[in-house]
Image (cartoon, rainbow, N blue to C red; front, side):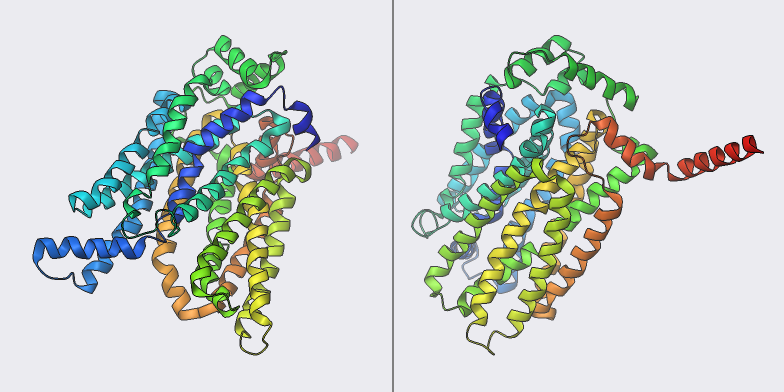
Amino acid sequence: MNIMTSELVHYRNLFLMILTLGIGGTFQYGYHLSVMNSPSPFIKQFINDSWIRRHGTSIPDGSLTLIWSLVVSVFSIGGLIGSTASGFLTGRLGKKKCQLCNAVLPLVSALLMGLSKTVGHFEMIVAARFLSGFYSGLGINIHAQYVGEAAPRKLRGFINATGPMFVCLGKLCGQIIGLREIFGTEFLWPQVLLFSGITSLVQMVTLPFFPESPSYLLLVKGDKEGCLQALKQLWGDRDHQPVIDEMLQEQNIQKKGKHMGVLELIRDPSHRYQLLAMIGLILSLQLSGANAIYFYAYDVFHEAGFPEDEIPYVSLGVGGFEFVSAMMCSLLIDRFGRRILLLGGFSLMALTLALLTVTLAMQEVFFWMPYCSVGLTFTFIFLYGAGPAGATISTCVEIFAQAPRVPAFVISGVFSWVGLYILGMIFPYIVETLQHFCFLLFLFVIMVSGTAIYFFIPETKGKSIAEISQEFNKLNFRRQHKDTKTATSEGVLCSRL
């Protein structure tokens, strides 16, 4: 916090750029995760009305379920394609130009959704959701890499943690926009994507005033003067030569040239454990139980005595609480480090899930149990946002150098979006089968994840990419290190003899 206060004047342009990137980056992902929940009954009714106009009869229940499932799942399909295309697009256009082009798509998506009811074609909603997924998947990758490469080392954790913070802000805005007092009505639901288009329009106007990523300019484009100008604009007018020297040293260490493909990264033994660590962290977030908490929130609040018409506002409080916790993470991460937030967060989350399972099982035994469940729900959301959610993204950005970072985030996006799609398909069946005991499954996942983090993921706080790579090389080349150590011991023994 002290660092942020003292350096605010120097880094004011950097903070403004982070705000500009956020509203068109991870904000869009969070927004589209939540904005469709409230107007879903009206959308289903519109699908039925459209079907009646075409066929003269109401849509069969099976067909309605299938079309609604397509509306929901096509977002993940678009996200997967957008995330996979990010490596090629950012390599050809650079992150700034790519994000500017990406900012056009929310306008198209909002237009399709806005005109769908007027035209009478529910297919336009499917197309809008696909585009929403595409630019969300592309925007997440661009945002994470862009801010990570523009961040000074002492603020790296704080800046990387702003990505999850904008996700939470997007979720919160999506919940607000979907309220019946705003766009969650029978007549205004086609305008739910209007706010998404407005934020992208703001980004299109403001982003051209900021530079391309400094490391991209130097290491990919070979533009040392452009890199220096970008650093001066973002970090203030001072001596940046040590930073440039460190970037060049990073490039020499990697010895991979300017570009690195996905297959090349997968085959590269020097990045094997970094890749496994990233995939493990991404899957741990998805399987941590956060989705289950949101799924059960309605029942928990209902049992606690909240009137049914007030539950959406209580759920809005959960979204606001998650946003506050994400802000807390951004303030704590450079103070305590990534491992402490990951390990401490997962440990406390596991304890919370265990207690929540007990309270849900005893809802009707004691009159005060539902209130305990409400408290544990808020506690879990806070721990999730203040710990693993922010620390995971920061760690994933920091363990890769410039060359492998782009293909690494392509791979990360594939696992993230495929995992989201599969979890969305099987999660209702898990809940139907296990009921509230499904939290025990997530508890097991968290315990396994925490153990793996403890043994295989080093602290990245304040370290250069060279130092982080050396830590991982102890795992990537464990056999060579062991053979070298053995040979050294034998040499010492022979010299003594």
